[in-house]
Image (tube, rainbow, N blue to C red; front, side, top):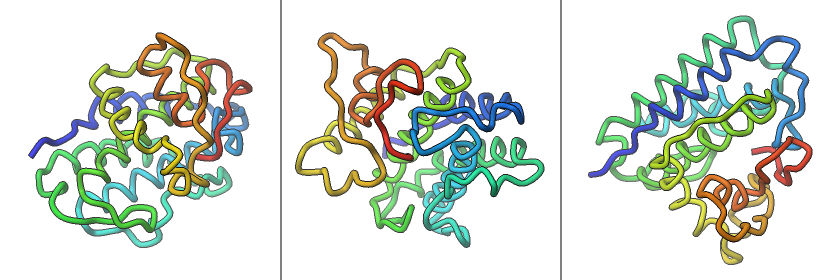
Length: 202
């Protein structure tokens, strides 16, 4: 069975989380309902939730992933979140993670679909955080293509009910757009400043 390597994307996101200063926690993000602090809290929660999904052992209280509430960040949140992201990558290296059904965010999913969702969350929220911090975002071509394999069918009119309220409506994809720009548009984001985004809080 083909497994996904979440290592590059989780490593990039972990470095971004580790770089966030206390003063930056109040900055806006492309997730229009999230500040940087809210986004970081969400990332930490989703990492724990998808580790549980990989192991078929959901962690207590992780059914909804991170709540997206900066007030829930406790001392040591940088170290805790980066450790959870490393654990996430390791958990999905196991072929057993892809067997059968699992659950994440209160939704039952086949293992391979859960892995794709986890990668998509890490890649897109990595871009969200980098954009909010005003720093370049690096992602591999392979990760973007894997995410597009999830996002394209998830962005059809027939899938609209399954998107809400997790993602904003798909935006038009500019002709000839690079794959990352297409991915962002399909998930309700415009490449640019936080104020140009059109997404909800995920």
